[in-house]
Length: 171
Image (cartoon, rainbow, N blue to C red; front, side, top):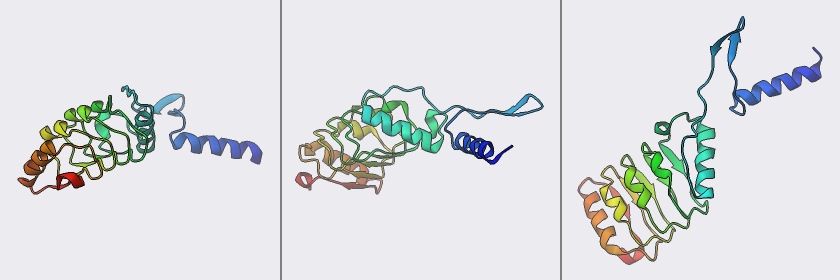
């Protein structure tokens, strides 16, 4: 085989191994290995959040919702979290510097430990009050945020030794 075809074959094999295509391994016409397909059973309305989730699934080769435990979607232009509740195993979530106003879908993310919401447009954190595993929350630079629930969240977290960074108006 000449070097041109060998180079193309090696490039194709490399791309497939990197997850760019679907493949299986056969020996004597018997399939001995087929990797699980990447996870696609979710619907996320916000295009920016969907792109972030898709990229993370591809990068981490995630084949099931429970494998997604860390998601960094900071500075992504996200306005809605609808659909994120599908990923109930999330433990760390960075949504800093987006355009979020509501956190309602986070109610179902009961495994969350670290949550970064710095620099959004939040006005209510009530959905976080039921997230009992939180150990670190950053709410700084959310100027419209009401302090009643922020202070209640801080009180709940203080009992477990967790850390909360409050917005300036709630200190």
